[in-house]
Image (cartoon, rainbow, N blue to C red; front, side, top):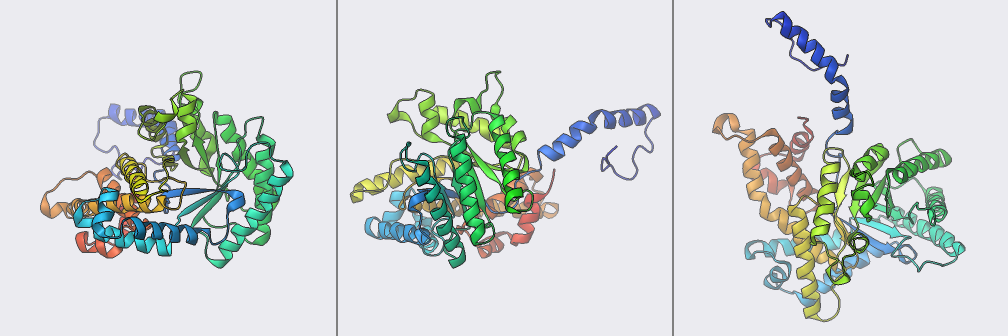
Amino acid sequence: MKSTGRPAQGTAGLPDAIAQAITELDELLADSDHALQTRYPGDRPGRQPVHTAYVPADQFQPDLAAEWGRLATAALADCVPSPADFGAAMGLPDDIAGVVRDRVTAKLATEPVEDFRLDFEDGYKPAGDADAAEDADAVAAAGRLADAVVSGSAPPFTGIRSKSLEAATRLRAIRTITIFLAELLARGPLPAGFALTLPKVSSADQVQALALLCGRLEQTFGLPGGSLTFEIQAETPQLILGPDGSATIASCVRAGGARLAGVHYGTYDYAAALGVAGDFQRLDHPAADHARETLQVAVAGTGVRLSDGSHNVLPAGSRSEVIAAWQQHSGLVRRALERGFYQGWDLHPAQLASRYAATYGFFAAGLPRACERLRNYTESARTGTLEEPATARALAGFLLRGHDCGAISAADISERCGLDIAVLTSLRQARR
C-alpha cells in the first residue's frame, strides 16, 4: 500500500473499530488516491505564452517576429500617438494607460512574438497543391526556423500546425511533420518550446495516434523519450460531446498523456460546424462559451493548458478602422483573461498591440489587490486575515503570469508584497 502521508501518531488512541476502518478505507481508496495524484498533477511548470501567432509556413522568415514588432509599433505611432488615445482604443483607465503603453512599446521592441506556429493547414496554400510543393515548403520552412534559432531571432515558443489525422489528410500530415523535423534536426537540436499542433480533432483515438507518432519520430531521430509535445485544436462538436454523451475532450487528455501540452479553441470551424451564421461566428458567442467551459473543466488540474481562438476583424485600413478593430480585439482578450484563458491566437501584426495592451492592462489593474491579498495570506498569523491555500496558489499564478509576459516586474511585486519570484513559484506549485 502506498504511503498516505498520515501524521506519525497514526491511529494511536482511536477505538479499534475505527483503526480497522482506516485500514479498510486506505485499501478502498488506494486506486482513487493514485489516480488523483497522477491524472491531476496541477499546473504545467514553466511559462505559458500569452498568444500564438499563426503564419503560413511558406511565408515564414527568420526575422519575421521583429518585422511584426515593427509593424505593430508603427500602427501605434500612427493611430494612437498619446497615452490618452491608446487608453481609449484599448479600453484602459487613464491611471494605467501611460505605463501600459510604455511597456507594450518595449515588448514590441524586444520580444514582439511569444509563439509562432508555422501553418500547413487552413492558413497555408489552397487545398490541392501538389504534394511535392508541400514537401519543399516543409524543408524550406524548417531551415528558416533553424536559422532563426541560431541567430536568436526566434520567439521562445515555436512549432508547426500540420493537417489533420482524418483519413483524407493523414498521410500528408505525417509526411509534413516528418520532413520538417528531419530538416530542423539536421540543422541543430530541437528548439526549446517547440510543439506540434493537430487540428480538427474529433476523437481520443486521433490524440493517441499522434502520441504514438511522436514516439516513433523520437526513435527515428534519436530524440530523448518525451521530447515531442503537441497541442490539439477544439474545432469539432464531436470533441466537446461524443456519440455516447460523454465529453470527448476528457478522454483526449488521458490519451495524450504527458505529451499533450495544450488545447486551443477554434473559433470559426467550431461555430460553422454548429450552423452558426457567419456574421455571428465570434469569440463571445454563447456556443463558444459552452465549448470553452467544457474544455476548461476537462483539463483543470491536468497540466494541459488552454488557449482561446482567433478574432478575424483585423486592424487594417483607415485610422478609424484600425482603432475599431483594436477596441473589439482588446475587449475579447480581456474577456478571455477574466474567464481564465491566458492565451489566444493572433493573425495580424497589429493585433500584437491590442493583445499586449489588454493583457498588460489586466495584470497592471490586478497587481495591487493581488499583492495585498497575498501579503495578507503570508502574514495571516499576525493580521488574522483568512485566505484559502487555493487562493494563494491562484494569486501567485496571476503574478507569475504577469511577470512572465513583461506586464509587471519583479520589483513591482516585491515592493507590494515582499515576495520574490522563487517564493511565488513555490506557492503556485504547492499541492493541496
